[in-house]
Image (cartoon, rainbow, N blue to C red; front, side, top):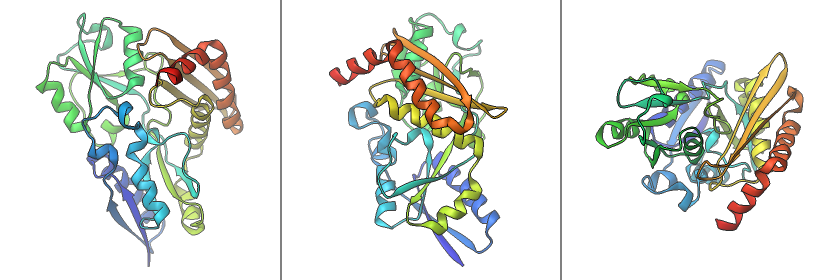
Length: 309
């Protein structure tokens, strides 16, 4: 009997994602048992703080990666969108699961017709700068309010605060089987998803070849193509948590279309473009899109953010 120690955050969504991976592993290998180890990250400890002020989304993975490197866990399950563009030396992303719906969802307090139907000056809650700038680019009248907490907390705040609506990831709703009323899906044309949104990344130590080989069975080829392209785009831009960046890859008939976006934090200036090409050139396409966006005005946005961070 082989035991794998799986590290996860303790939120309901993180535990559900760990459960899905556990089920997939044990379905393939009857001789394998999975021990779940809950790790409280800095992002969990500072649940009410502004992520941009305390270190960005990497705070949700730092302690988990430290546990991997220390050998106290063997495997980590991450929402790929929470992983920084670069991972620590000695670790590897061994598998990317089949992508869940990558889109964002607007949930309103009252019945309505989605983003366009919100009242003038409506208050919209989101923890994501990427979501905020795209909302403001479409509706400059909106009042975007910071909103942290797990999914249950955010849904509760929609009804216990002056918020008119919130924006959350469709993937989280689907994995937790939550179907809130007055929800409308935002198309990628309106709200480009975060890099990696909807994909689970399975991370292990690079020297754990046996586990890495087993994890290959859980790797989803087209999700890997999208993940590689989107993360190459993010890495080539060199953006940080102060810069709104979005990226979304889709594979159709063996060809990859990758859309990307860089914006100013107020949503006034948005540079968006796309590339297409063979899926086996995913990383090259990601870097090519970053170059196009830099040349089209993204470099000025990135330089200004670096200077003012």
